[in-house]
View 1 (cartoon, helix red, strand yellow):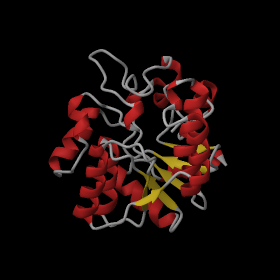
View 2: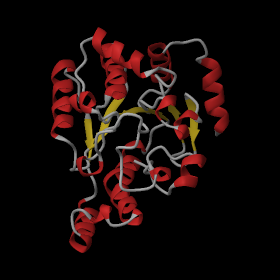
View 3: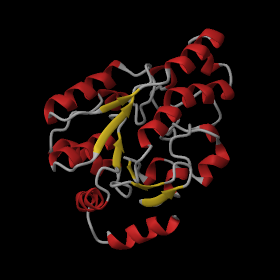
View 4: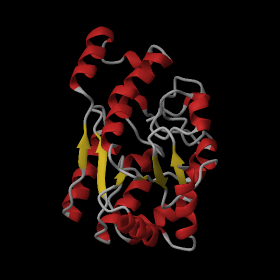
Length: 244
């Protein structure tokens, strides 16, 4: 099925992000979906979708451990665009079992426990969200990490059996910020306080000058374990079973 991704790359060559989103939305009607965590990049893609009335379902993973600032951006984005953002929650039975057995902060105790938490709160809900879709849109950029830099802007996701498209894959962080300023898009104010990558509150800290982009995620673990299962590729899978 990798051929599908290659074919789409050829068909959309030379098109801009919005043009490509429109092309894919028309070609895969009702089977195209965008995942947002309300960070800088995702707010840009959300604006592209909502401002152009593209028929692409927007969803987020409500892990239950998000920052208050994230909830504010979520709510403000819905107010501005008047469009739904679908929430996918962890399965109650799995979450209750884990917390009952290991407590609410077991992810600090071992990599295995952290992966278990990511799997329950992120990976399993993601699979439900992606089920039945053919195209998954993300806000990934190449310069975010070495692993992401080895990806393609349109690629086949063998784990989830669909095509992934990263509309702003080749953008710099300055281009992202300029777009947000130009269109006055709400964004997470944690970005202004040293948080380039924002996930669950207990697992995210500010990044210090000179540190890697994802150094603030699961900072108590080795640098090689900075992914959690959502965007699994062969390279990522080699590092870690799950990423979220």
